[in-house]
Length: 416
Image 1 (cartoon, helix red, strand yellow):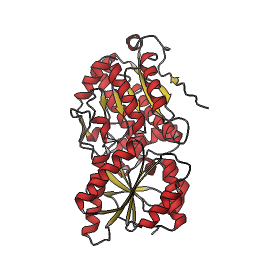
Image 2: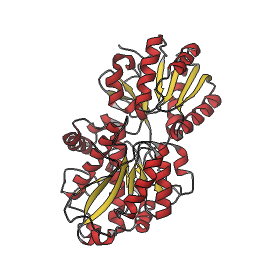
Image 3: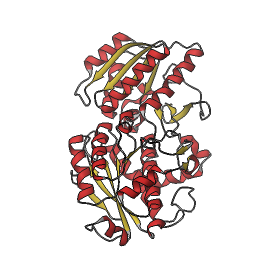
């Protein structure tokens, strides 16, 4: 059983020392990662760890077959070949644990940077610690827009945020409507932490601007033991499109609950999170066929970028599963951070922060379908182009935008 206290994964050898600078001199650079490793979101956390361990494998050992930063050599050349070492912490899905764990990683474990954290609410707590202690924090898959709108200099996010994702989702609805499909009413269903609140606020605004009628606007308590009353409200509203912003456990309750009540929306258009977790699809079976979720990762891009297949094979060796949208974003955040550490030439938080701010990484040197990774003055990458994926019953297919689509849109949702 994984305890709250983190464990250290030694890679390359020398044990824990008192100072980050001493670590670098002895051939290793410590990076802290914070994810839920226990509780209902534990599988996401373990997959995140596997994804970032895959980055460590690529950086620390030669992988000339990969056209990715630092893959060709061994270690960080900017630090004399020093190896990356991870210090992993379990934040248990709560800010109350995430905050002191982030402090401990920096103050006691002497990590030079942080990566995390799945829940945006936990990410906001980690961000405050990173800013105060002047170590960079890479928000791996946290999507709340407000995370990079607080004037924090040490917070960076390579992936899109929910405003960017929501605009793409409404672009799809506009396209369906233009083709004559019945897409008039929308039900918003959002959990009550930072992620759900930010997501619902943007979707509510976009619905008004683009002429969609919001017939249900439900904010529910995250991880509530039952969502029965909320399910009855959704059935009564009978919206054409259901737009959930939910983590895995709540998403499972939602899908099973509306199926039991006989409410079948014409589309579920999800704000990722639980709806990109394979555990949800395993739990609900065919009830979810045709669900659409926004994403950062397009698995079919592997046909054009061989590095994706190689990275996926390395990830599968550790995790037993293929890369998902979440694990792809976690991998990318850690790879961007490793590149910045190398360019900084030191395991120093301020220098790494400046190197991150100067990042300009072409999209074709990542595993993502983006133009590039380049952070604006808020720490947000504006070049992270969202995609929409549809669940076919055994895999996701990219359906939008048209330039990246490999399959047509199944609408209304449901088995073929």
